[in-house]
Image (cartoon, rainbow, N blue to C red):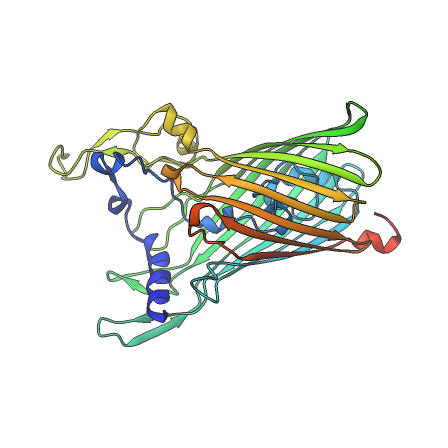
Length: 401
């Protein structure tokens, strides 16, 4: 198991150092309909908190809380308290490797009636690995790790609409300076921003019940590419478009139910379709694109083309959209039961799983748990693992709820 772990983690670290030629899609490969869109630093797309984790990884339009930074920072403008803090922990690949984990710290502070600032730290540890030379002698022991630091400013423009701008610093150290094919590697660094909006209407009625409708949109990780050596091509970070809605019915003073759905699409180039080796070769000997577009473009072009560059056409573009849906029931605004489902097309990653979760809210303290159940025995990275979140409402010390 130790050998398998070391080999797996070294592959994770070195994959980003290899030119995209090794991952080119040929006609024969595309006949299997698998054409996954990949990026560097994918840890940025992991749902870090247990409330959304228990609802199928929805969150862009849920009611605001301290974890809004990841899902939609614009929601911060409508938080009911002056100060909030959340700490989350997720074991990762725990069925295979015992020391990989994701930790998340986020919080906010209200400036005035209309303005809120938010901060967060996302830390991903890949555990300890041993680097060896050609004869198997250990040359270095290293703990690969990645993190991002975020800051956001959110402002409400009315009692129903808000917007936010967030900034992010990304650091990824996967190899500890190891040499790859004689080339020295280095930590990857990138800068990014999020642009988000949020709308909520609490004045609706469904028959005899009060209801709230919310809509959110967040374009996250708009930023520079990342590289791990001086000579390697730079790779896209996971620029992502998330759109979603939530509808809440307040049955009475004690019982409420929220249904929510998010749509996600990576705004990065789709791998093109190449001619089979020998069918067509350029003057330089490089493979020739048969369908799709050259993925080695700048960030603005890559984002724009991501809506029409799939080699399979519009149908493949639709398959690049993942769907998250969830339900949340609250009793007396103190106890919650959650469930959800996440769907990703088989040709674009094939993640499919159910989630369940519970939540508890007291005056100052909150606690959330989430559990993931993969569909049809899928070996999801989060299969059969728990996620934990603790929330602190410091304003509650003054008697506010």
